[in-house]
Image (cartoon, rainbow, N blue to C red; front, side, top):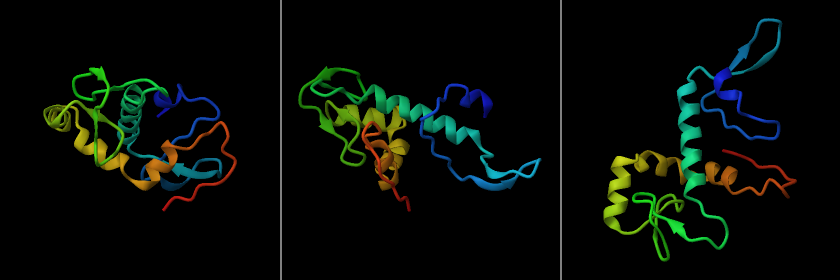
Amino acid sequence: MPRILKNFKVGYTIALFYPTFHYFLGGTVGVRVEDSHSVMEVLEMNKEVIKYTPTEGAKQKCYSCDETKDNLNMCAGCKTFHYCNKDCQTKAWKGKGHKKVCRVLKDDNVKKIRFLNYGVFDGGVTFR
């Protein structure tokens, strides 16, 4: 985990998948993540989301072929990635692993984290 955490800064938000309650040496209590592989998968997914989420007013980029153009089709599942056509979507579903990512990105709790405006957010969020 330390090699992963070295890039984090104060103010970052992280999600812990399947943490276990743990008593550490010295009497402190916290959570422990046994499987850092899931953390790496989330970081990789986040890079893809950032890469394919355009800034306001910019054109969308096809998640499969990387072409930037108007009027791309949005994935009906996650509503995050866009495609030129059904062929591009099928290629990304299998070749880029969108099937797994789509399932995660359409989860309500993930959407809550993703769409918070942290610059102006001053409330709390409840997760199921």
